[in-house]
Image 1 (cartoon, rainbow over the protein chains, first blue to last red):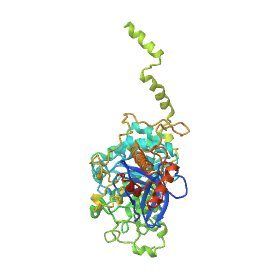
Image 2: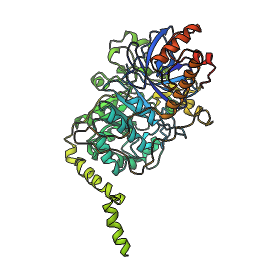
Image 3: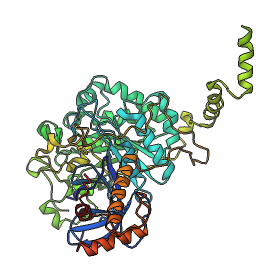
Length: 362
Length: 190
């Protein structure tokens, strides 16, 4: 597991600081850059605006171009952007208005506004980066979020965002804003768990969620937004999947992709594992039907977080490697597997004795 | 009544337009410029689809490396740890004005939008850095290493003054303000 935090020596700041780490021998590219002075074992000393900024990390670790968030009084900084990774995500709030049975990041009551810092950080990302925006529910702070994305868009037109949202806080009046931000700029990851509103509402723990989501999807459609519809496969919606595929075909044909996702065993997902995890290695039929229905209509369909050996051979092309690099692991039997190069493996917190029953090397 | 009739034209002549007239033309241009597609046009648009990968909400869980219990202790950036005593960490005076209307600029058709506020360093830290640099410059001056201006900026002469001082005090020579330098001068930075 790749650590997303990094040790720093105390630095005289009074508010959160964004720093990009730059290799030695060059002038600072911006006022946010710290230039490497020297490496002494685990200790790397940088020049940041005339001050020594010291980071502790293994000597072989590449952190050039990484963007850190340093908080006053803390000796552990957050690696907001890892320059070498395609899996950078900003957690913009921990507040949420849903309580999903499989939530991997249970919500918190309080919010700290770091949007200004996130805007600076995103603008320091490598060329062409796609940055995830996650929560909590990011659109609870819609105005600030849009403002942040706009700032970055102006400074760095090459940067794109993947916004994970429950889609329920979009109003018809947002159409213009979303359109201006650009369908190339943002991929909206929006969850829909069932075409049956009661089932959907029950899974997300909120009455009326489905109805509000429908309105949100209309707004996204009218704005010409790119939408990745996301459905976590659960025992709760297992029998609904083919109907959901039909619903998407008839009502949501504008989406860019439909992602069927395996469960992540963390947070409430861990708590509710026994009542939620659907072993798709032993029973795949509902997914097979759902994928067939959706693809027949030309809806691009994808299986996220499915180890390749859990998927029947003829459906493996639908299962790209999607688990983020820093929280991915492989099991013992993966060593001999011929598909390891293209398989996303398992979540770090996956527990095999409670997981898929019928797996093995390919 | 009479004075009112005269008042308005004379204010206009003097350039004091009612505030709404400023906004009017802008609003019209914006409305005319934004080509929100019709549903039919919508279907012809090319969409990005990048496999952004699985991005789950737990992406930042490992940020809470010090919390013992992952599932409930997982905090994002854990800022609250230092927020309560406002003496330790004061939120910056908001540079963001809560404007009821979103401040999204109208994009030109070339999609090179204009935006008023460039991304800049938040003032709090800048002030803090400057304050420390001035203290260091004062100390360097007092000890005879520096003869430049006490301006709170680390220029070439201040750098070489720091290097000379570090060398004399048997500190690591970096030409930057290190914790050792601050300690040697008895400057409390935090």
